[in-house]
Image (cartoon, rainbow, N blue to C red; front, top):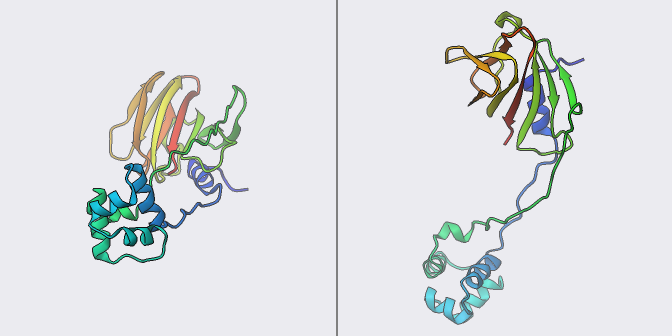
Length: 207
């Protein structure tokens, strides 16, 4: 059985779900949308761009591939740059996704040093991986080197007292309510320094 590590959790979370690709941009539709967003008629937009109405109509209907000179005129008339003609508009997408993890629920993943409870597990293609961790480790020599992975990470102490070790900074003792945000490619490990196992909330970026 493969040993569960923080790196494995992050790899699995990143690989879940299908990769999405954007739709190809239709230049004619893009020009029409830009014109209509300004409330301009064909005549008004053509006049602004210094093009014939018939030329603009053919471009919008995909009946003509504009020359670079025509593209420059369109961009000037629409008060945007040429690259913006080929940049899809940012669409507001409200997915309505939500996942609730009640106390005592969540998928458990145990290691020799930490015991993780994955949160929001029902959602795929997440941009962040939240999990609660019980810190079992009491000494740095319990780790097989530094933990490191892509992305950024946020740590928030829920109970107990921990010591956060990082590759480039002095070790920091942290108590309930303390937090840290750091570059996760930098080596890092956490141990409990209180009598009981400390618990922390970890959130790791996946995007």
